[in-house]
Image (cartoon, rainbow, N blue to C red; front, top):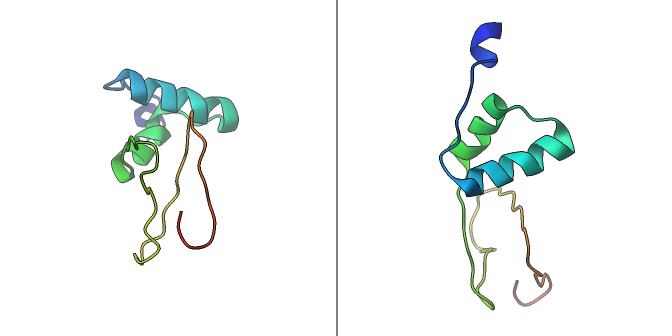
Length: 77
């Protein structure tokens, strides 16, 4: 199991590489662990004014917002 955890992992895109570097620098997350983040998450690019959060859904979500400014508040997000 230890050898499996240390295997080389190649990420598919520059976006994935940048996101892994973000997690690695802040938490020390290895690439193998980061693959779990990729399996469960998705990349979303939003336009100005576009809603990225739907309060009507029941799902629990983690949003990692990079290189933008977001408005969070009553009446809409």
